[in-house]
Image 1 (cartoon, rainbow over the protein chains, first blue to last red):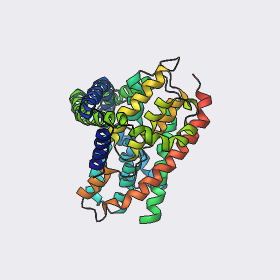
Image 2 (image 1 turned 120 degrees about the vertical axis):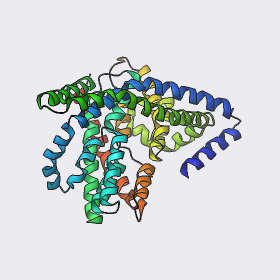
Image 3 (image 1 turned 90 degrees about the vertical axis):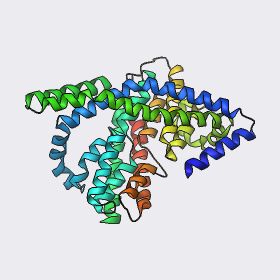
Image 4 (image 1 turned 30 degrees about the vertical axis):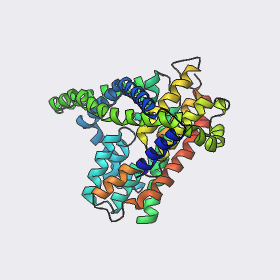
Length: 167
Length: 194
């Protein structure tokens, strides 16, 4: 719905301002495609790392060792994999979140916590890889540290709010 | 930094499999499938990014982004003091953040990448992140979204009574992360001088 209105307003405004809407759309789309092509190697590298973490069982090991700690701070252990994957992979965490919602129910406490984590944070590592990767910046300074810190705060706030409202 | 993280992850995982006597075959298979998955993801992304780049180009030519940037400009001048007099980059950043705010992730990425490219063009060390680049990264990694459409979609599909009930929580939680992220960005940048 939002998308339809946004498109209508933009194309409408373009016509009003006598913009060559068709030619400009084509040119923009052309630039978009070349951006994506430049992005491919970075996406590949990310998928390799996430696949290795999952297939080697290292992710599950981290999950188990952190399960006890998670329960201490009020995070259901079922959502630990999601909290770990969220900053790493958007599609990966979406799949995990979907699994949690269908197993425990979207309106259960576990489902609400999973929804809150999935919806309030973005894939920090992916954003950093893509944004710096596309322009070839190698020295990323404090950005990863800050990104992960803010993810931690977001997850903490999400936990606090869901506990307060739904538990 | 990415070299260390990526490299150590790969070595650790493979080492864990070899030393721990795990199913090496299965891990090798999942590694081999990575290329295929990356192509699928890139292709899936290509259509939407091209679509939004096209729409954004119309919006830009129609002066809509400029109008929006004028409204939000004061906030962004505070966040990006080094870009105070650099209207083109500020407009790119404002529209990138606005697209993120409306949950148009695929529209936000090309704008953000363009902003990064222009900031790099004006920087002396091409391989090093500037202060402004790091702040833009914080704005994008916190993912403050008014309407998380994908999440509402999977909640609806899982049979939720009220799929949108979570929106207040997601907005507040991501705002908390954003505020702490922006403060940490300001506080830490001097310790990570290139």
